[in-house]
Length: 335
Length: 289
View 1 (cartoon, chains in turn brown, orange):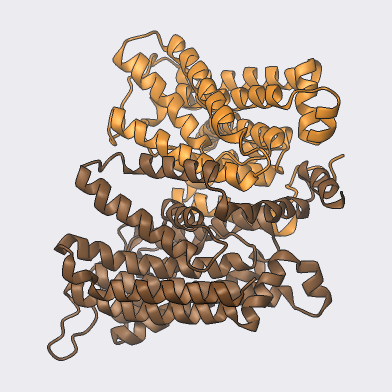
View 2: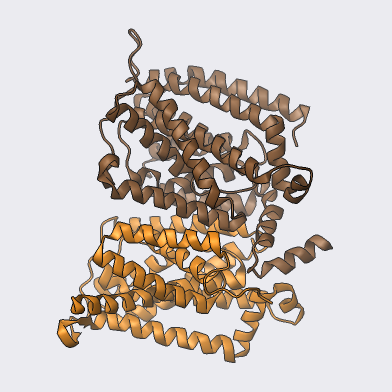
């Protein structure tokens, strides 16, 4: 539950981070600036993912919805000639609309079934990109996506400048997400997570709120996707596969999802370790192994972010009719 | 046309065989330990690479390599049980995450040891059975079918007729009650994990000459396995076999007559429909005691 103290700490943390981020490109090498751009985009991705998890549902389709934003924005600007800033917003809206449509089948499920269902839905979308060469470009994806237009002498082709653009967009988005979490809506998400029956009994339409969380999270994931598409200039189905989703999951869980800043800490720390330290050590091929070890170690020894999940996951299994854990979970709850 | 259909049926039977080996292992692990083993596809991959290493590089006899693959992957399963799933027993999401970590480690090990490119293995035998109308079943595929039938039959009788099997099913139904009856959860988990992993290992080892292993082959396998266990009903061994057969036939026929990607889409949509309409699975019991 939010309280004044965590609020102050979160603000202090956010401001310090922002100040550091503003001077960052000046001290980085060219390739590190590229990493910094992607890192800022990933921050938005993981923070929007956290909004989704507030309602207690863990989606495996978040990266695919980022891809929906990326594909939509790329198609709007490339095929229809929509100006890039507008198409970015349209991309985000498309991701939100896609999430709204998906919530009708998906929110008939809960817990573990939702996890698998969101994964299946995401894979279907990804395979559709792969199958239809028009308009999605098939397995090779879309190339030559127009970049962000120059404003006077400022060229967004430079990673340094694009970094500031991303920073502004992401900072505003993260602020909005933060306000949403602290608003009445965010509290309702918490209520649905911890006491969905009780929330329902006092008149909360849990389906509506789950859908709202999903749509909002997907909107911002789509925005992250469009920032990505117009920076890299190419998108393909493989970029948004379940492996990328696993990385988002790792960032969120290693960072801890009990707090707003947890996932941000996770993505920043892991990206620095992975892309700066390990890369400078020359351990390129072994990097996933390092990730795996970090993941196992954090689950085994650092259950801080995870401890809140245990009762939730128990309830997930409680809601599933055919699972053997049900009686055990119920017995524990009763005792 | 008839021969194409007959050939496709033969291919589907082969696909059903190795898919049910993998899915039954996954279901067994889930049923007894309550965790979804995301690394199951990589256990399959580890089985395939055992054959690459022993048979292709060290010239061991093929079936000795397969047996070694069975034991090796089974031991990997024991390691997972001891190091990951036992400490995380009361934390199913933790087990899932830890298995993703293990997946990355196995994958990277394969990349570092064998490179990212496909490993080509000369099949131990080129012999094949010519059935009527030129329908062909290679011996290599026959091995997989025979292995699946034999192993799954043995597993069935093991679970139904032996004390270990009863203990395992008791754990799957109610862990606490089973523990109160003096059944060792650790022991049962160990056995389930060994069998589940070994089945995936055998599937990988036997299909290695047919599929050209890559370190990333586990990905499509785990997706298929998920579809099968959802369609069959989570925790249902017989359901998993039935769903594997159903899925293999649908997938093989759509692949042959339309397109591989369409077949994948059909499979996923099938799973989504089952999730929406009957989440306990097509073959799932209405209520488990």
